Figure 1 (cartoon, one colour):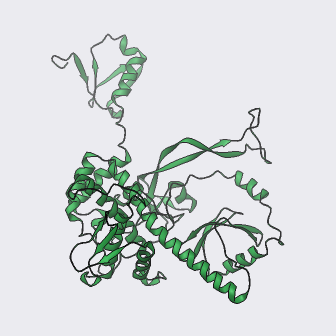
Figure 2: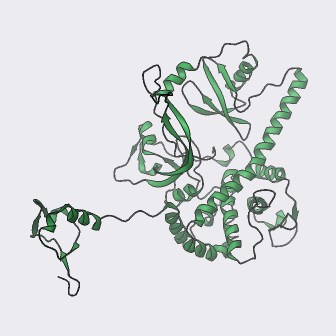
Amino acid sequence: MNPGTGIITVRWNGSSSFLLKEKKWSSHQKRPPFTVPIMPMSFLKTNTFYRRIRMSTKKEAPKALHVQVAEKLIEQLKAGTAPWQKPWTAAGSPAFQLPYNVISGNRYKGINTFSLLLAGYDDPRWMTYNQAASKDWQVKKGEHGTTIQYVRFYDEQTKRDQQGKPILDAYGKPEKELVKLEKPIINSAKVFNARQVAGIPELKIINPAELGWDPLERAEQLIKSTGADIVYRAGNRAYYSLLADQITVPLKAQFDSPGKFYATVLHEAGHWSGHPSRLDRSLMNKFGSEAYAREELRAEIASLLIGQELQIGHDPGQHIAYVKDWVQILTDTPFEIHAATADAEKIFNYLMDFERTRIQKQDQQEELKVAEVEKRPVKNLQMGDEIGYDNTVYRVVSLLKQSRFRMENLGNGAQFTLSKSDGLYASLVQAKATQVSRPVLDLSAVMEKQHDQEPETNAAYGLKR
């Protein structure tokens, strides 16, 4: 008995055991020590006693994802190993790649990017347990998944008639429908890195020469397409002026590499995106203030995303002055990493949309030129097109950069990337032109078949790599 507390501490050792409610607990069960107040033996036989015992040994709830990420990021910022503090190699290749889902090819977004980057793996490929199993890969014994979050806007429910009875399909199974939720639900999932999975092929590193486009030229065209007012001036300062709505950058010759020059311009373009007429972020902040450091955190993460997308890299030495402020902000407000990554994704999408718009206009102009020469109507694939060809129907899901299309085979649900140089593209364009006179595949059988397949929750979300 502990003096003055009225508490008896019960501990197990190699020889002791005791009997409670006809259940014998011994040391080999590895029960942790616990305390009980002095009470009559009759109470020890009640359910209330056992419930209190279970509550005393209950594990603490896991920390929220943004808290876990903030704590890891603080450690790496102090050590100088945070993702944007890692320079590119001398050969011009990145020190790491942004994490993406190996099945869909989609890059993880927002706070999930840092949750996976900070996990410490050098392979950017991630997957759920079921996704690994679908490829006959096996998560290694004893491996633990890394947490990501995704937002669910719809809930799958059984279709019902006016009497409330389930509506059955041709196979006698209840039909399902997606119902929009009043409030989105944030769900968590566990994903595994390729290093934790047996049987997966080795990661193929793409040489910059194999990209099919020039990173520096692509960066140049992106900057031009923004229409931003940029002044190039000899000096050592790069900044964005909100009052003048103008970017000032040192001359290209002052940088030790073209990549650093373009990365600097695009970093300032990140601030430029916060103008009230664009994404409307708070930019009237005094240098050295907490609000100023918060905006720099957003622009820095956006620079990391853009640098990886364009393969031009980033300059980790430019923003050392903000490290102390970032550590303090994340210590005081861990949720700031969630807000900052979300804003950085908005900056990334806003700037990259200029490239997508420019490419789409170029494609339209090329089609018009061809139509004028050949005296024929413009034929092109557009988002939302559903074209019957070769006993199936193809749908244009989205338009990608570099004149490519995200396609879906409605017959089996498979998605793939289609280029204008592919033979299928010409066939689909021709099929689209004659679709009025050509019978289109009846999708009823296809849709019935799809109802039998349980939809897999896609925890990977983001833009196509």
